[in-house]
Image (cartoon, rainbow, N blue to C red; front, side, top):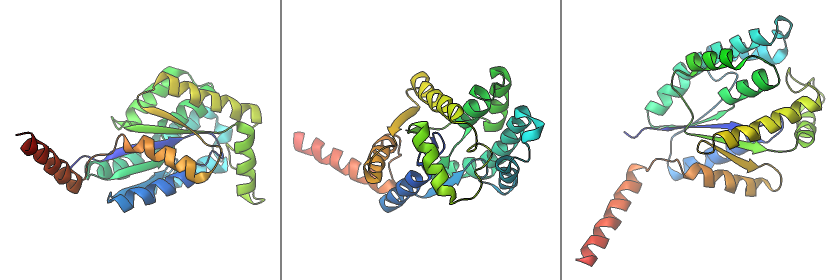
Length: 231
């Protein structure tokens, strides 16, 4: 059994993460991979309960530090109940948001000190660091227009409703993160045709995929043929 992969998708509101996760999941399944699609906040039974508290704004009055603690608690449950078992079972886990969102939403625009966030992240992820993080980038005003249209007249959630300037700060912070961690993070332009964006996402994902048993046999057979021909 090969080790699976943990791939996260990040970006501002309305970046198109959910659409791209759906498309890449379908592509990987057609190739023969066992895929798990999940999200944050949420993903596990306990974390989904916390998701409602966070996105409804019920915890907002208690301050951004309390929100950070709730995110960390939900993430720990998510990692241990869903992500780690799936990766250890050889599955490809595609996660809509992870620890990078906390770094940026609660850190950069929430002004929580970096030391606290690093300690919360260390405990919550417990070594489960993404093999790849895809940051889908769109201008904040476009992302928010998409989010508003998507809400179909319903009230925006706790984070979507914030000012445009805050969303722009988050966009810039994600881009800065990609510069700081270029090996793990890949930026994909979220503007343009959905299928073109999906192609760029696949190119990035393809680089970290494990070989399936059938692919290994084909590769070994090809190598053996080359050796035989050279002899």
